[in-house]
Length: 364
Ligand SMILES: Nc1ncnc2c1ncn2[C@@H]1O[C@H](COP(=O)(O)OP(=O)(O)OP(=O)(O)O)[C@@H](O)[C@H]1O
Ligand SMILES: [Mg+2]
Image (cartoon, rainbow, N blue to C red; front, side, top):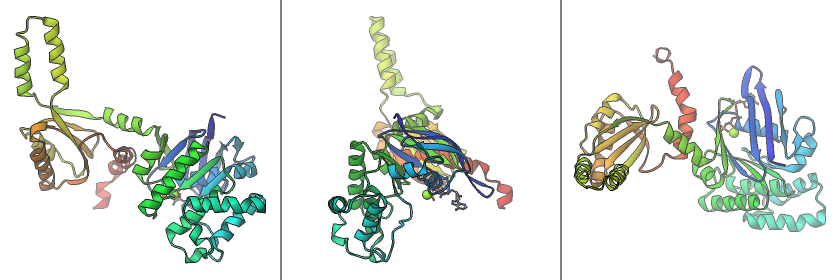
C-alpha cells in the first residue's frame, strides 16, 4: 500500500457552511504528515471524517486501505486518535480509561497489563495511573489520551494538536515517541500550530485554508517556493566590487578573468535581513533603499521584505533598518537573517487573501 490516506473530493457541509471543500489529498504510508492551517480552516473536521466520527457530505477517503463510508468499522480498528479536546471519562482513573479502550479493541486482559504499563512508562504517566482524570492537569490528561490512542498499535495515528499546553520536556518526550512510532512503521497525521514541531517531524506538509488545501510539499520545498516568488525590487551596484572587476580586465588570460569576475558577482559580502512587517509602506522601502550600506531590497508579498546589507556594516545597519521601519509606523512581527521560516510560508499562503479582501469602506 503506497498511501495510508487517499481522499477523493472529501467534503463536509454544516448546514450551508462548507467546512471542507472537495479535498483531494494523499498521505504516504509510513510517513509523518503535518496538517496546518489557521483556526477554522477545516483540519479537525477533516480528521473527524477520516476517523469515522462524522460522515462526509460528499466524496470519500480510504484510510489504511479501507473506505471510510463503506467500511468504517475496519477503519476504526486500524487507527488511533488523540483528539483536540481530550475525551476521557473524568470520574474514572487514568488506568481505568485506558483499560476501557483496550477492551473496546478486544485486547485480552492478560496482554493489557504489560502493554498499559509499557506505554505509561514511555510517556511518564505511570505515577498517576490511579488518579481520577478530572483531578489531573491538562498535560497529564494529554498523556493518558496518547496512551489510550496507542493501546491497539494502530497503523495510522491522528494527533490533533497533541503538544498544546505541554511543558517543554514533555513535548520532547512526545516528539521522540512520534518519531519512534514512525520508525516502527506507523503513519502519523499531526495537526499543529507549532511550526517548529511540524518542521522538525514531518516529511510532508499540507496547508489548509477555508476548507481547501492551498499547499502540499516538503517543508524545504515550501520555503524554496516562497523564496522563488520574491520580487527583486531594487539592486544597487557594489562600487568596490566593480573596481575589482575592472582591475581584473587587465589580466591577459581572458578566460581566467571571466571566471574570476563571475565568482566576484556571486560572492558580494552581504547579510540578508528578512522580516515580516505589518504596515509596510512605499515610504519605508524608499528610505531603506537610500541607505548607503544597503545593496538590495526584495519583497515577496505585502508583508515580507528582505534587505541585503553590507557585511561590514551589519550590526549598525540592522539597527538602522529597524529604526526606519518603526519610525514610519511599521510593525515588525518576525525577523531573521537567513531563509524564510515555515511560519512565513504559512502566512503567505493563508493570510494574504484575508488582507486583500478587507473592504476598507465597510470597516469605516
Ligand atoms: N459541529 C459543527 N457545526 C457547525 N460548524 C462547525 C462544526 N464544527 C466545526 N464547524 C465549523 O467548521 C469550520 C472548520 O472547523 P474545524 O474545527 O475543522 O477547524 P480547524 O482547522 O480544526 O481549526 P483550529 O485550528 O481552530 O482547531 C469552522 O468555521 C467551524 O466553526
Ligand atoms: Mg482543530
